[in-house]
Length: 137
Image 1 (cartoon, rainbow, N blue to C red):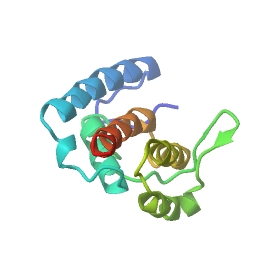
Image 2: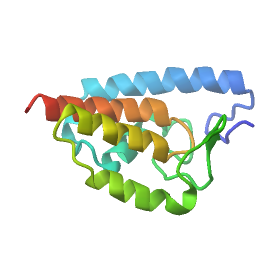
Image 3: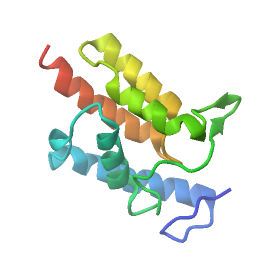
Image 4: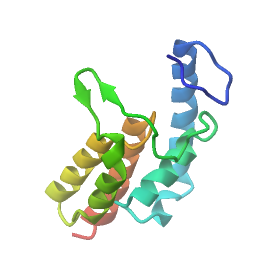
């Protein structure tokens, strides 16, 4: 299945290459332009901003919570009916030390709030939290 995309690409391998190329370029911009420095690290609202920035040139759903249930192999991510509650609970999780930050990151990965790009997106979100919180500890 090929996700509907703004590029009009119908080949999954070609879409994957373009998605990687564009999202990597956008990821560099997030860091170089200081965009991450302006975000409230560890909040879902920031994750949405990062996702929209990375994927807005590719997908219509960039920055939007998924509207389908997702699974990878035998693992099912947070069911759609509980997703918003899960994200609210993740927002409330503490992030005052390394273990708390990693636990929050793991929970966000299980939530998997977007249709595509969760891994790249959440790793940048994690980097933002670690730089912001651990430097201050």
